[in-house]
Amino acid sequence: MTKEQKLGSIFALIGGVMGIVAHIILFLTWYFRGMSAEAAEPGCEILLRWIHPAMSDLGILGGVIFLISAYGFFTQKKWAFLLSVIAIVLALQGAWFINVPFMAAGLPPIYFTIFWPYLILYFLMMLLVGKMSWGHTLLGLLSGMAWVFCMMNGIASLSRIITIGAPFFSLVQRLHWIAMLGWGVVTVSLLIRPKEWTRVVGLTAGTLELVVGIPLAIITGQELGRFSLFSLAAISCLFLVVLFLLPRIWEKIEKRDEIKEGAAMLNPAAQTR
Image (cartoon, rainbow, N blue to C red; front, side, top):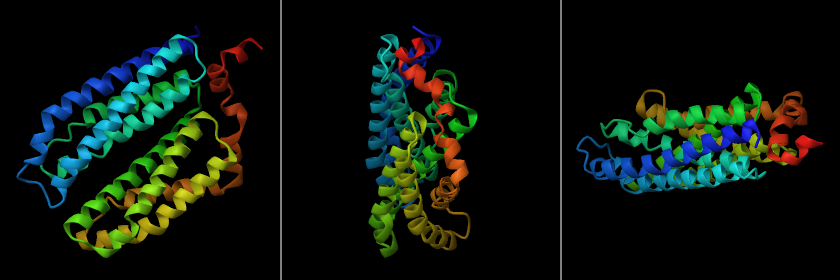
């Protein structure tokens, strides 16, 4: 077993136990508190009643995948790192968004207690286990942020549809989730083996979010009289679209020599060649 595989098994085991145990404890402790919060703004009760369990589902699923990944690292399977990437993408999503309605309801953002450890775990996995460069790791993080923010826009739009029935939210809500799915796939691909199709899917998802996200950010910003959180998806997607459009930047992303160490770790047989 290589050093990377030993670290991978340890990190994945930590991620798995943390994801499963923490989500169960936090959900059972805060679910009813969230739904009954008196300070809840219109729509918060919907998010805390229905989206809270869904985010916990993602977190627990990520934890289970982490445990399978830990087994894969321990038995030197080449799919172990892929599962860890999928697990961390799900785990960060499950630990992020639900903090927003909690804060809007006047409650503490208790899921940040696992989001920040997972973010640290992400860097440890990519840098020490995947042997990726800082640039590659940060690009994956930015893509993951787009995946998180697009989901956030879709959920928040659904809440607005239910509470106030605004037609523009009805128009764009599903498209946010399509962009979200695109960025989820792109994030995993970027961290494993970026290909030309990764670029195409990223450009499609990013442009889609810009088309529906920029007008939404302007409308909600004018209504609130301040910066709108709906802007975050458009901002992250704008950066990514620009990076993907620049041929020289994409060539650097796609170069095999930037990920050859990670590829060798994924395929132990390659280390003996």
